[in-house]
Length: 114
Image (cartoon, rainbow, N blue to C red):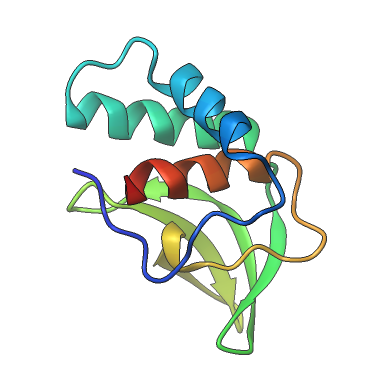
């Protein structure tokens, strides 16, 4: 099931046509919503370089990887103050400079918003 992003629109760093191409590549063999969600999860795991640092509401985070929550939402596995937590991937801002493969996260945000 697609989760709507929470006020996180695709950055203007990448052209929409590039992001749409990544969406097509990620979902090429997926048929239903569940398969599409898992296909995007796998594409993100493959292309997004971990770990990377970011901050949420001014609190520094180390993003170590991804997991899928109980409701099939993609979660970022983060370390905050030595504690490992899962946060919705769509809620995390990209750091500057973004990690390698960040265009896949922006493609995911675009796909979820459509």
